[in-house]
Amino acid sequence: MCTHGQDHHHDGADRALGVRIKAIRAASKETYGSPRIHEDLKSQGEHLGRKRIERLMRREDLSVQPRQRFVVTTDSDHDLPIDRAEST
Image 1 (cartoon, rainbow, N blue to C red):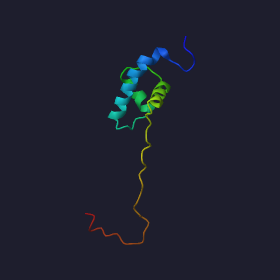
Image 2: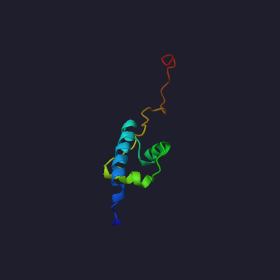
Image 3: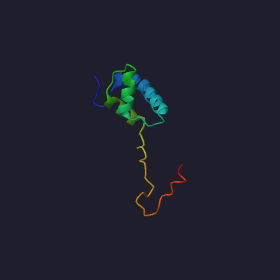
Image 4: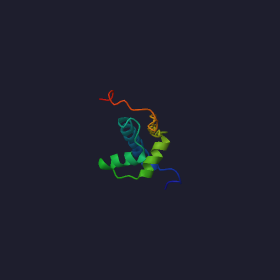
């Protein structure tokens, strides 16, 4: 019987799973979070919960940086004439 918070029966499998999670993250240029990793593992025939993947990612300190949003730098609302000759 395990005490709360200790999953001794998963220790070996968790280590192997951690290696696979790191490989998936590396292949995705560290952009995949737990939902995408879960889908990727599911497509490979693994049956595990997303919460378990989240726990392993937290344990290994594998966080995902939010994607940088596209910033519009063009001022399209100006009063200057548009010179169409240069754009062709």
